Amino acid sequence: LTELDYDELVYGHNRLSEIAENYPNASLGLIRFLYIIILKRMEIRDRSRSVNSVDIIFNFDCIGFTGTPFLDNYPTSDYIRHQREDDIPPSIDRSFYAYTSEELSQDEFENRFSQFQGQNSDVKVEYVSSDFMQESLKIGEMETLKEIFTREQENPKAESRKTTKAPFNAIVDLCGIFKLSTIEDVRSLVLEHFGPDCFHYIYHIDQSDGSDRMLCIKSKNDVTFDEEFYRDLCKRYGADLRHKIFFFVDNRNYIGKDVPYQLIYQRHFKLPLFVKSVVIAHDVEDFSKIWQAMGRSRTMNDTTFSIYKSNIPADMIKGNNGLGDIKTLPLTRLLYTKNCDCKMAGNLSSIYQTLIALYNLSQDSFYYSDDIVNSFIEKMEMTIQTKVKMLEDKIATVVLGTH
Image 1 (tube, rainbow, N blue to C red):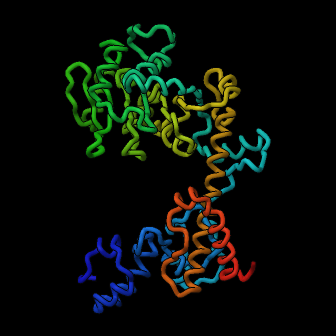
Image 2 (cartoon, rainbow, N blue to C red):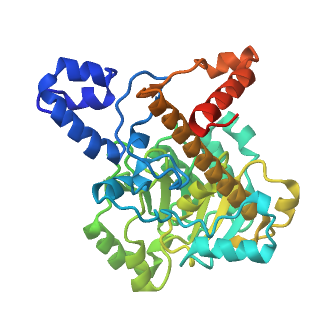
Image 3 (cartoon, rainbow, N blue to C red):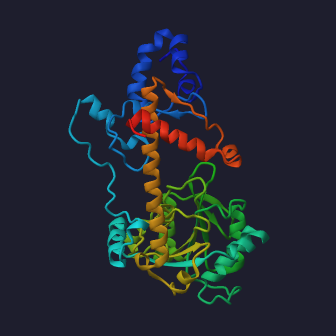
């Protein structure tokens, strides 16, 4: 494909027929591209309202759904390449899924959730209502963070009390509550609230390149948090190091990033680097994201958690008096089952895309185009239901041969 610009091919808007016509010498390479590259989840776009069918053209295993529409989860290319005819194995283990419709007993739910937890089998959590943030954020982000500091203190009334050991040392901002604030703003608040003798450094993630940084609260020096610096801190503070670092983990751009040296610290000092982790999940409904944020602590069984969440049902707040085993808390069950229900919705979406793709093939078409151009306008004009019903009937007739 030397005659084609790679980005133009993958992200462009030309039809395949146009590409083949404009670059006749690239036809054989284009075929190889379709078989090898697109089978790995690339897309060639035609227009924004089209449904891409490339993944389904080579995906003949219509029963091999995995719960997501991504081709990475399908073993199709391997089956075609080796001309296999045996049954396609499930790509995702759903034995630990718990759906709302199943109405599981508490014991059965806890059993499935334990399978989901794996080695993180003894996680202690307290859910805290974050409804107060709706008002505090009107004043400012640092005012909201200050309110969290106050609530997490052993004595909620001791807002201005200076201490040498805070009851927590990690904040994980899962939803961008503090997106407008700088690490210097956080430093000023930490110094004001806890005093100069509590935390000496603030860990943070450089938002420009994702590197691990340490900001000295006293000198304001901002340095790379590398192995050499970590060893120096251990020599200086020993096991007390975890009480001298405030971990401010901003999840906006680096969701999958872990704080380094946690396991090394635990093996050496037999303690978790996170004393307690405060997860700000204010408007987050996806439990998998909350669990991932808790995973910033590589030592979940030894770290305790406060999870700040809005719109917690009143009876569930009353039932959470202090820390508890996460799988026994009613809010955990509510969030987890909703998450599993959404996974099933994703599975149905994948099935729908397959049906659309099969219809495309029956019409010798690479893309699908129908009468639903703008779903927002269709809903406003109250025509969407009629058009969806017509689409359903057409697909059932052409693909399934039924009415």
